[in-house]
Length: 219
Image (tube, rainbow, N blue to C red; front, side, top):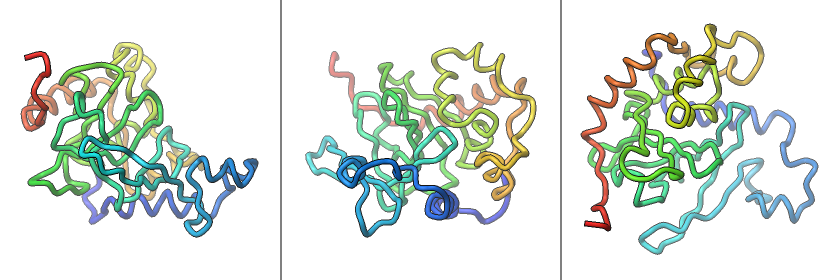
């Protein structure tokens, strides 16, 4: 959890700069296929799609693919992730695994969010409040948790926690992978395996009561 003055915009810029400078992930695609993936001619390699939320107003998501098991949203398009019956009402999503709707959210404070807000993982494939897992007191603690596995694997903390812990690596990435560069850029360190269960329990006790859920339609 780095003490420096990093912001969410810095994190997004890290992935943006890598995507814009590196190989184009959509290079093999035709122009029509690129448009279907959300590529627009004037936006470089940033992608986009439209979200239809409960208020009936579609909103555009802009994002970059990453090599870290996730896609990260442009700060201008960070808003509630949908799945209103599962995701807390006082959250906004900033990252997704693009698998089964799994996404990562900031818990807002009086409607505002920043990298200092707690992070909650929402799993729409399940149901009810317990489909949400608090994974960090802030963005940087959350990033440390997924640093050794990639962020697409974090859903296994819900589905198969014993297997996740059994396979959790002992070392931080120190190679030239995107995770390794991410660690160096932001001074991140991974969690100790033995600390994961107790820390998640502490995070749940501290932050889960802050989550606001819609009324149960069955009541």
